[in-house]
Length: 193
Image (cartoon, rainbow, N blue to C red):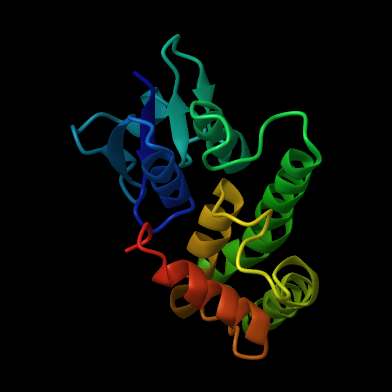
C-alpha cells in the first residue's frame, strides 16, 4: 500500500485531503520535522534522504517527495475525482496551477517561517508574496469557486493549505478579496471540515 508521510500544517496535508476526497486509501504517518522522527520513532532521513514532506513511498519502494508529483499520483489512483483526466486541456491547466502554487507562492512564503530573517529580507519576501497573491486574485480565482473546472481538485487542496499559513507566516490577504472569498468558499466545503 502507498504510504504518505506528512505534517498536518505543511503542504503535505493537501495530500491527505486529496486522498480523502478521492476515496483513495493510503497509509499515513506523521513526521516531526524538528526531530525528523516519524510517529513510530524511525529517523525520517532513512526513508526520505531529502527529509521533506510530503513523501509518498510507492508499493515498489520508489519515493515521490515534491507536492505537485505526490498530489498528481494520488489523483491518478482515482481518475477524474480530484484532477481532470490526463491528456486534457484542463489537466494542463491543473498542472499550471500546481506549478504556480509550488514554485511561486509556496516558494515565496517559505522564508517567512524563519524567525531569524532580517526586517529587510522579510519586507522583500512579503513584497514577493503580495505580487503572487495579486496574480492569484486577479487571474486564478477571479469569479471562480475552484481553480480548474467546476469542482474541487488537488490544486484547490494545495492552495487552500498554503493560504492557511497566513497567521503563522504573517502575510496578509486582506487586500485580495477574490483570494479571501475563494479561501472561505473552500474552507466551508464539507470535505474540508
